[in-house]
Length: 322
Image 1 (cartoon, rainbow, N blue to C red):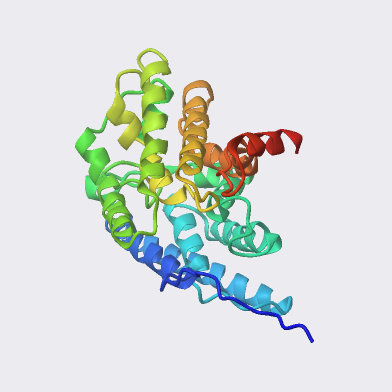
Image 2: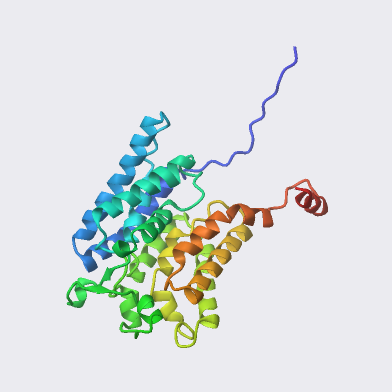
């Protein structure tokens, strides 16, 4: 009787799990959440709690209904709920937020196989749904209460400048968060604090994030319309949600190689900058990153790591014949 010899491979063992990574991402978003409560009031906390609860329960009941492994406790739904609510204005109707939560978890995430199988960022897709279906409900911003002004609708800094208005806020106000905008994206300082925590924990690719942000800033600086973005790097950097998009929404886990991640980041940056410059939208982060998400497969084919044991020439011919 022949015997089969099984040899254990040189597996890499690590304490990093999905739950550990997502829990740390959730922790990194706490400063932005506290800033949202400080700038926009206790309603920000109420909306955040609601968003997280809806996302976790949606995932739990769907997995129970379909008799799949319940992963609602791995903090991935918590991250989706936090990112989604922090990308909303404090005036967002409750039903709009709930609809976006259910859509993000149920349609974008679970119906494509759950975490690791969704082809786009669920929170960004939920945000896009609200922008298309209920733009009036999610694109009306108010000034932070710290400015001692009435809670009237106001455009974001980029929105005001793009429509021909004046830049009425200083760079310091933009950096600290004393400007109208989504609850979690106004304070760049607090976002960078959370980003630094993720870098310390080693759960984010800082090079790809900075490449994305740098691509957008450089392209808008060079090609931006006269008197709008041209020559004003800080306006592009602090006037919108670029830092939040680059630090938290740019999911690059689909790529293993360094060059693949950078190619993905540059692609998202080019699309974001093009929308900022040529479209009617003052932003472009949502469209840029989601489009790059959809192009991840093609980008992976364009750049593939060399397979050890196969010559470079043979590998190139194999790629052409596919």
